[in-house]
Amino acid sequence: MSAADFDLAVIGSGPAGLAAAALAASRGLSTVLLDEQPEAGGQIYRAITDTPVRDRRVLGPDYWRGAELLGPLRDSGAVHWPGSTVWSVARPRDEDAAAAAGTSERTLQIGLSRDGAASMLTVRHVLMATGALERPFPIPGWTLPGVLGAGAAQILLKTSGLAPSGRVALAGTGPLLWLLAWQYLRAGVALDVILDTTPRANWRAALPLLPGFLRSPYLGKGAKLLLDVRRKVKVVDNVTALRAVGEGQLAAVVYRRGDEEERSLAADTLLLHHGVVPNLNLANATGCAQQWDEGQRCWRPTTDDWGATSVEGVSLAGDGAGIGGAVAAEQAGRIAALDILRRLGRIDRAERDAAAIPHREGLERALRGRAFLDTLYRPSAAFRVPADDTIVCRCEEITAGAVREAVRLGCSGPNQAKSFLRCGMGPCQGRLCGPTVTEVIAAERGVSPAEVGYYRLRPPVKPITLAELAALPKTEADVNAVQKH
Amino acid sequence: MFRRLPDIAGDRVSFTIDGRPAEARSGDNVAAALLANGIAACRNTPVSGAPRGPYCMMGVCFDCLVTIDGTGNRQGCQVRVTPGMAVETQDGKREVER
Image (cartoon, rainbow over all chains, first blue to last red):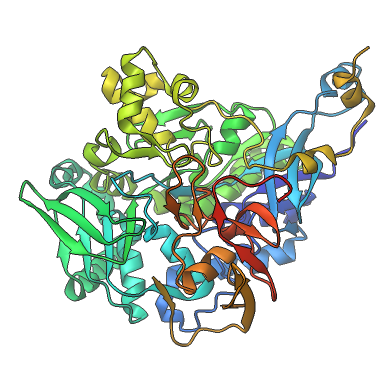
């Protein structure tokens, strides 16, 4: 029966994946690290091996810290396959019969594309370290060329040394927005304005959580960074409405401060950000249970203390399991790897627990103050649940109004909305509309997002061509399954 | 619009955008190279024909779809520019045989 190609496949080479693969491989598991990008690092440490930005002060010490994860990976013996897009994770079809006959161990099959060719990889355990993506920020005009995510702009800086020129506006809330502004200032890039959408009321809600944040390692750094940016860039606080306008190209940003009159600013580039959410498409399509996280206002796959999901043989670590940031992800990766070592019989429970102690302490330290940040930077309802004329599904160009109309016609959740409207059915597979569609339906029905649910996703989680699929090697069972008898 | 910062490493790479000569740096992906060449809109949507350009730069939004060396619907942000590469902006859906 199919022997596994590797004991463990780690999917995603950000901090969680890098740390997990290095630990697992160094303790004897044959490990493959798969990642879509051409180089290790994930998004937070994107281009860490080959960024063309020579001046190290521009990207800052928290970025360069990522390079420390590469040595242990190299030394560990893990096999690193960059440029590998995983499009499915599933139990092999013929395995149940084989397992019943006692002729094989449980395995998982990974569908991946490398260099334009699809293949299947058989492994004993999968660790998903799929990270985060920017929370969709649906405002009128966010589909116009010239409007990008702040995270996207930061990737352009890291990978290519590119920065916006002309009139530049940053808008939104959250640490990444301020970090990007700080990096631009270091690089000598002029910014016209930061439109800060942090709701005033968030300060009151966050205040009781301040003691936790005061013990956070981020406090000193964050405060200095904020002050630096505020000294040098015009910041408009308490922005309550925002839209991008232009004919086929961004021309201006229109905003409202508090309940004042709208103002218009000419702009060539608008960079939007209001936090990040777990990139859960692969876990969802693999059948992992997920839950609504009220504190972070997002869906996340359900995991135990060791990152194990509801699907046997599948674990999850890092921001893909709930937002905690890069340092927390690294520790969570190691904790998950230790549990996988136990599950695959390399260490016993006591050894796992003992080895995890320093990583649990590190994780606890890294998560200090997170609740304060989550509360302070929670986007206002007006930006999470947009007005009728705003496009929520970028692929199929479905507006919030169309989703509300579908609810009035009896559509109760995202999967029905998908059938009614095609929202979430385009190539991005709901990544850019899922959180919004959930919240719009919940608000319209007057129930919680948890009750409304999320898209039920199906593999392939990234589009592949029929030619690639057709070229896959087929077993006799595969052929029998589709041929007439 | 995006511009290259001063003091940026990388060799120059020649490629074409809709047949016109253009320049990128080694390490650039196609979406970054388009932005560096002043092209913010790289396709029209199949639904309404509205122009779109790179939005997420990490392979999730599919707004940077372009035709690369004759193959349509490639995610520009996921493909590195190589010397002589022919990048074409895309009008609507991917065409059959492309």
